[in-house]
Each structure stands twice: as C-alpha cells, then as structure tokens.
Image 1 (cartoon, rainbow, N blue to C red):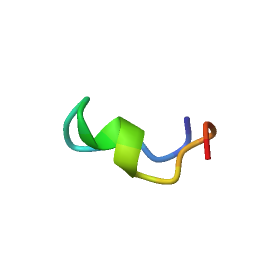
Image 2: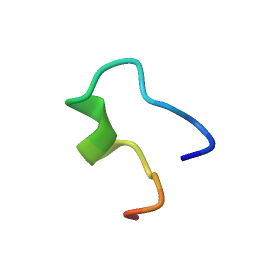
Image 3: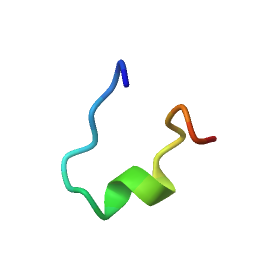
Image 4: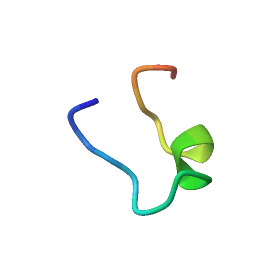
Length: 19
C-alpha cells in the first residue's frame, strides 16, 4: 500500500495492490 487513497471507497477504484 504505497499510495493510500483519499477515502476507503476509492481504495476499490484506485489501482492499488489489489489491481
């Protein structure tokens, strides 16, 4: 989790480790 999203909801949208 290098780049933490602004909101937990965006975590699903943002291209995180989950892809």
